[in-house]
Structures are given as C-alpha cells and as structure tokens.
Amino acid sequence: MPNPVVELLFQRARAALRGLSDAPRRWARTTREQVRAVRDYGALDWLELASAVVLALVFMLWLRDWYHGNAPALLDPKLTADDARTAIFPFHRYEKGAPLANDPIATEMLEYQPYCYRLIFRLFVPLVGLLYTTKIVQALLFALIAAGGLVLVRSRRAGLGAGLLLVFFFFRDQYVQNRILGGLPRGFGFPLAALWIAGAIAERPNPRRAAALIAALTYPTALAMVLAAEGLYVVRRLGFPGWRTAWRRLRHYAYLVAACGALLAPAVFVGMSNGGPIHTLEQARREPAFSGRLHVLPFGDPGKEFGTVVTEVLSHYREGESPLPAVKAELDGYEHEIGVAMLSAFLLLPLLGWSMSPSAVARFFVADLILYALARFFAFRLYSPERFYSVGMRAVILALAASAMGLVAPALATPWRRVARNLTSALVLAFVWIGIGDGVRDPAMGATIDYRREAPLWDFIRTLPLDARIASHIEDGDTIPLFAARATNGTAETLQPWLTLSWKRQKARAEDTLRAMYATDRKTVLDFARKYRVTHLLVNRSRYREDFRSRAKSFEPFTSFTSVLLSGRSLADLVLASVPPSAVVFRFRQWQLVDVAKLERAWAGGAPPAPPEHFPGSADDDQNGDDTPE
Image (tube, rainbow, N blue to C red; front, side, top):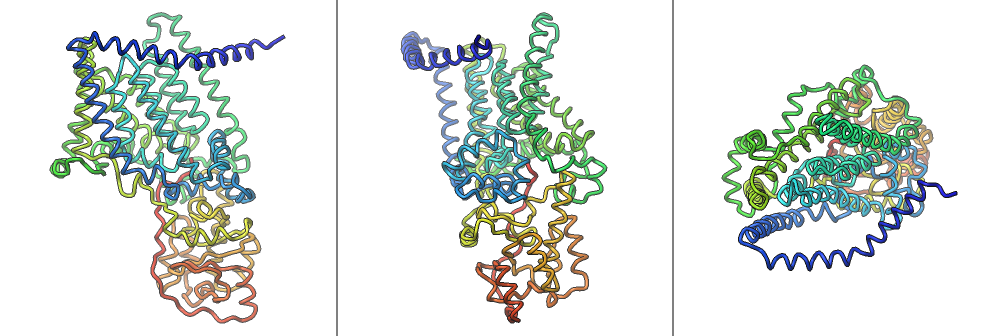
C-alpha cells in the first residue's frame, strides 16, 4: 500500500513538471495579452508606464556603476574577506588529494559551519575549486536580496518602487557588502532579513517561510531573527478577522518552527561534539580573549550600540563615486544634517499617513530588540549579542528606507499611487547616488585579502607535501591554509574562544608555538616540532629586531603571555633570530620558510647563524577585522 505522504509528494512533483512544460505557452499568452492591452492605454496608463521606465532606467544606470566598481570582489577568486581564513579553508578537503582532511584545526573550524553550507562546498569545490565556490555563494546571497525585491515588485501592496529601493539600499550599503564578501555563513544574515521583510510587507507567507528554512540550514543567528519576527507577525490583530484564522496562523507557525528545528538539529546535537560547552558569561569575563580577541566584552550601552548603527547607515558610509562629483562634494559638508533629514523622512512619512505603515519592519525591529536582550541575559547561548544590532538593526534601517520612500501615497487611487511611488523612488535613488555615492569603496567591498600580495610564498608552500604543518607567530600564518592549503599550528583566525574545551586546547597550542618562536635554546624548538609534527617554521624576520618585544604583541591573553616570556631576554638570546642559511628553503620579503629537518641537521653540525638581514616589509601586513566563526 503506497505511503500517502510519498504519493502526495509525487503528485506535487508531477504538477510542478506540468507547470514547467506549460510555462512557455503561458508566457507567450501573457505577452500577447499585454501587447493588446497597450493598444487600449489612456493618458494615465502611459504616465504610469513612463514613470516605471524612468525608475528602471535610473536603477539600471546605478547598478551598472555599482557592478563595474565591485567587479573585482564579485568575480576575482583571489580577492576575499579576512574571515575566509577562519571559515572557508577547511573545505580544501574536497579538492583532489583532500588537503587538510586530517588537520585537527581545520576539522575544528569546519564544525562551526552549518551542514547545508558545507554541502554547497561539497558539491562545487570538486568542480570549480574552493576560491571560485566562494564567488558562487556570494552571487547566491545577492540573488536572495534581489528575490526580496522581486517579491515586492510583484506585490499589489508594494510595487516596482519599493522593490528596487530594497535592492538598492541593501546592495549599496558597505557593511552589507562586506558581510556577503567571501561567501561566508554570516553573509546569509542580511539577504534573509531582506527576504523576510519583503514577504511581510507583501503579506506573502512563502517568502517568509523560505527565509526561515534557509536560515535553519545556513545561519542560526538569522534563523533566530526571522522566527522571532514571524512569531510577532503571526499574532498581529489576534482574533481578527476571526479565531479560526488566528488558530490557522498559529498552527502554520508551529509547523514552521518544527521544520526549522529539524533542519537545525544536526548542527546542535552533532556539531562541535568535542569542543565542550559554550563559556558562560562569568567564565567569559575571566577570559581576556573575549575582549582582546572577540571584542564582545564588556557589553556596551544598548542605546549607544543601536544608535551607532543608525548613524553609520545614514551618514558614515559615504564611500563611492557620483555621476555629478561637484554635487557630492558640496553635500559632503552636510553629512550629519542629511542623515537627520533622511531619518526624519523615513519616520514621519508613515506617521503622517503619507506612506504605508512600516508594521512589518517594526515587527522585525521589536524581535531584534527582544533577541538582543536575551542574548545578553543568556550570554553566550544565542551567540554574540553584537549580531542583533550590527545585522538586525542595520537591516531595519535599510528596509525602513525602502518601505517609507517606496510605499508613499497609500490614499491615492491605484494608477496615481503607482505613478507617485515610481517617481518618488526614482528621485530618492538618484539623490542618494548623486549626493552620497554609488556604494563602491576601495578596496571593493573591503576585500583586504589578496592572493597576489604574497603569491610566491603561497605558490611555494603549495609544493610542500600534503601533510606539511607550518608554525609561525600567531599573527603571521593566517592565510596559509586558505591560499596554500597546508596546515598551520594555529593562528589568530583559528583561535576562537567560544567553547571551553576547544579554547583550552587552542590556548595551550598557541602558547607552545610562541615559546618555540621566541626560544632561547634549540631543544625547545625541536621538541615543539616533534610534539606537534611541525615540518616547517615561517619566520617573520621583521619580528626579530631590537624592538622585538613590542613586535611580539598580538591580542590578549597572548600579548601578556609574550611580555612575560620575553622579560629579561635580549635579541641575541633568540635562536630563530639567526637561522642557518642551509635550513631556509624559501625567502620572500621578510619571510623565511625553514625546514625543521634541515634546521636540526644544521644545528647538529654546528652550522653558523645567518648574518643580520635588511629587507622591506612589516609585521602588520595582514588586515585584522571581525573574524569570529559564523
């Protein structure tokens, strides 16, 4: 006897296939009907069409500039975000030869990644490689924002203006771009927020549910925001138009929560099985890494944190070119005044009834506030509270701008309302583009990690055996696993203090590495290499100068650790300050790649140390940023 659920799924699949086969005929019929309708257009219809053309033209001209300016970050696989050195490099194991498959650090970083996110890389990395896969994920994230805009464009409650403004404001924002750059899990936050808000404005349940389900598979923080907002949306006007409708909404919401829970369950109950529990707030306050490494403690003033985001969205992020540079130069002197005027317009237009009520955006905002409070109270069970203002609050401001300006004139008759919304949206888009900028920055989207900057080093390391392990100062080897696909002994990007047992291992490993890099006897270096199976040392010669103590600094607790470690030592005491030339297998700028086996033989044979070197470069080449795991 066939299973009724399976039979229902087969019926729906067959119906979907029939729909696809009929689609060309439906599109042709719709096109013919629209052509016939144009023949009957009156003056108002032509005015509406003209306003839509004007809006679309302004949007496309801006999008052209935005694309050309950001093309390197969008298309160049050798440009990426700093956090790719935390979240992306473990997926090298899906390439030929499975590099890093046996690296415990890569495995530990992999366990932070949601399962569906891993599946994307499992499918594409064997086909196009790791770095190209990140560009595919980036494109998917921008496509999700565009899908939110399309939901509004197709909605009778919204229309073309609101849809294009939603895409414009989210695409243009510098912080949104930087979060999406690199195709990291964190990149799903803004696209899914935009998709849910668009579904709520349009009163379309499927986009809202899709946002929740995708979030369950890719980014739990976004799931919390979307489900909380959906819960507030479901209980709107509870009992009206009737309790039967209210019960149906609640039942569907329960189904959605259950489905999301099922999709999230593997990550909750299987992921990070040996990482230990999350630090409690009291434990975190005693661990300097939560302030020195993650910058999440001490918690700031909520009003200041949320207010700073509002200020940044409206006035601070003014990067980009203008088609009329003289106008932008004139307005740059009124940055704060323009920000206040814009925020006033976004709030006053709905309050005065000149724009549609921003109730959908307000629900997302309230949900975000509730989650922020819970994240602080139950720290760190809901991950970092920072996410709920840096992502949630910014999404609220951007969506409010799109809805307030794109949904004007709700009291006008339908044709006049569409004309008013199209023209208003075109004016807003043109004003922001001309007066504030197109949203292109240098480097594009904040892509600070460029393969070409030290390509010879990465190319050489890639020639080493797959089981090679490289130790360095914890601030020096971050990019090796990503660009060279070889293991390190832990660096700043992989030092993640969220889980108690994991952090205990990481901290001990990092301290041992620093002891070896600043050892005063050869035995310490060689014993360290044997303990951790380190085959090579990456020595940054710029760290071994007269001011080596200050150059040893990184972040707490390791800055204090090296300060104590180096107390009373001189540069002449450090054995890696003068490496035998026969042990150095590669040199590039300030970098020396030292083969541990050759180093041991050189020391055993009494090889003389290398003479002092002079070279360009500094210890601070890598760009640091927000590099918590996502």
